[in-house]
Amino acid sequence: MGQGAAQEAIPAMEAGEASSLALLLEKLIIAGTGIVLAAAAVYFAARFLYRMYQRFYEQHKEPDDESEFIWKNTDLREKTARKPNKQLLFPFGNPSQKIRRMYKKSIVDRFHARENIPAEMTPMELEFQESVCSDSEKLNKVLLYEKARYSQHPCDKKEVEQMKQYIKSGH
Image (cartoon, rainbow, N blue to C red; front, side, top):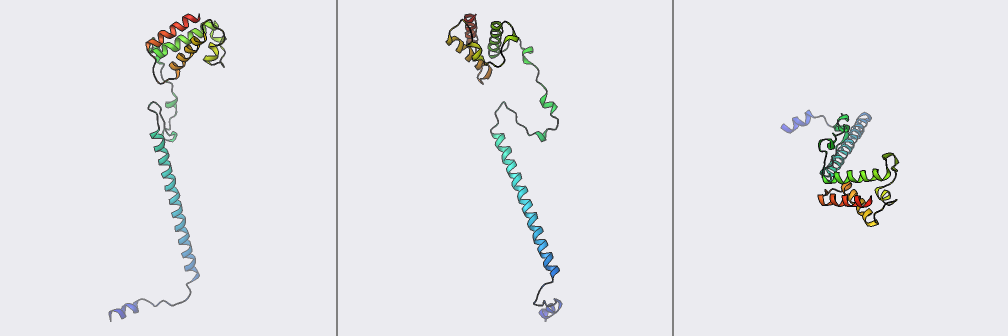
């Protein structure tokens, strides 16, 4: 009796075709679900790739370099502000600064004015123009200057003394 009453409450489905409206709604629901799932997959894939990109650049960051994403910092004027000149605070400087200063002074003295120094010439080309000292002294002088300027390893007092000797012999 219990099952008979339940079967009478549920209308019997007739075997046959479904209405065209039901088929259209079914296709729209399936298409909409597919589009939403595809959009979600693209979004999460893009987000995953972006996170990987950020992690890659954070891991390979040099200790003295600073890497930021522009859209996180809206005020760019703070970043472009120049740092105060440290030479004013420390007039004597470290050995690397001394070597650079001595080299620049020797070049200015050799060309008799800053305006006469050809801007397109490298330190090596400047040294090998005309000078009294030997080729090995010229090369060592340029190498010391380039170490002071570009190397991550600081120069020492012994190298400052060597630069003084090279400059004295070159005049």
